[in-house]
Image (cartoon, rainbow, N blue to C red):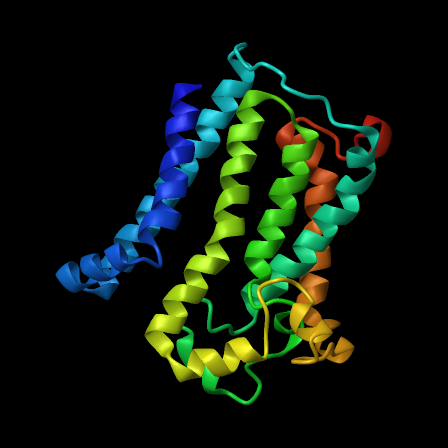
Length: 236
């Protein structure tokens, strides 16, 4: 469990204390942006692998106490919430977005706010947050709390760090983009600063997301040893 805790702390540290902070700027000034991005990518991949392997070892190691048992409502909500997470995260990854790495110039485009970005300017992180939250609610053992809790904290706190970084770096271009969008899903639409376009939402990106969800849904028991279906059904 100690390895999992250390991996979780490293995962939080590299994303919340390095990426999008002034420390990142100091490192970039010292070694250059390309070198930093290469090292950060390798570091992120390494920490993620460490986190996953530590979680798997903790689950089978025998010292994984249960702190709570999920209520029935969590099992009932798991599939639709994970489906929603996919429908946010995957199209969000595939759309040009000023919040994404090296895509700041997108903010000046006339079509900068489109598709799922009308719902939230951080669709990928909100998708991860939903995925992590429902898995956190459904798994009350210590290892799962640390594992999924790490993802949830990064996804929940990441938008604030990104917004602050973009505001400082982009100035008025960011302010214009932020005025037409929101971090909190649907907040800009409710406030009348944006509108929902179904023709933009229901495009090929949504189909990719739905297909990815279905593939993982039916492969979940084989890949992770747990059926996501009611009653524990395992597809042939």
